Length: 431
Image (cartoon, rainbow, N blue to C red):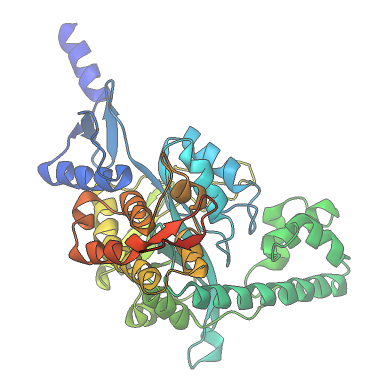
């Protein structure tokens, strides 16, 4: 009887084992970045055969990254604040907000995350088109961009690209409505615009929601499967840039580019080959139902990061993956940060250097774009530009990354610039 109990107990705990030395080091590196070098209490961890961290006992904690999510600023159902709250409730420590073709929701997400000690990765899912020489092989491709805490360098270039895409989305939505009307499924533009919300460029999901409300289809899935799928009878393209051009711009502006949901593509191998040549960093491989071997092998073949996220929109229903439901192995998170951190470091350096060369209010606005309250107010008032740099570095970089002579030179240059309570540059008078 005792032996049977032991066997049952062993079976229930099967698959769990202590972290390997490599996984322990990887977890420490990831956790350091998540906590920005703050000392954490010692914890014990287990990992399953998949390499995913499992908490063990009191104090045990798992670092959950959610790298694909949407808010009301594109086609999600939740505000950035509600999205952050839900992610926190699901144990997410790092959330990438990746709205379609806009980064407008990032400041609100950053502010909301402060209450929970969460980290926000400023992201965006860019709508592009893959257009090879063979026109029959043309298809839409979505590229995820992940930036450091200060966002893209040369932000105006990224913003212009996204603005052009959004303008095209208005025309695209109107064309879809026109096609639906010709199919004897009457919809009005005002209906779709109301669902999208003020200032939000409408997408297919907004059109689908209007179709459900109008009684043309039973649910969102039916709207897509019958009318709005790629190449469907009511499908329409917008003014998307070439996928290769988007990847190059992400790389040039200090971001990590990742191919989104390759399983939705007709010719993923061809597209991955071309995007790798353009500078693609990774592709989604993990979903809530596990790692997809065929895409994992494709990523390996081209030396790409293997990532993934829930693609959460908040529409509800059993068909949608929940925030934080994609288990990314700790070694995967380490590899992601090993690639991303040097790129983000260079972006931080370039943005702060530009401010040191010209400490204008416009350059200050670039620094504080995604964290104005956190940076300018913080725990203590700022007195000069040096304090500003110290605070930014403590928020954005680890202790090791901050040990750079370049930042000391930048702080020296800004020691004569005062920051007013409202976040305005004020020269310090000298005798």
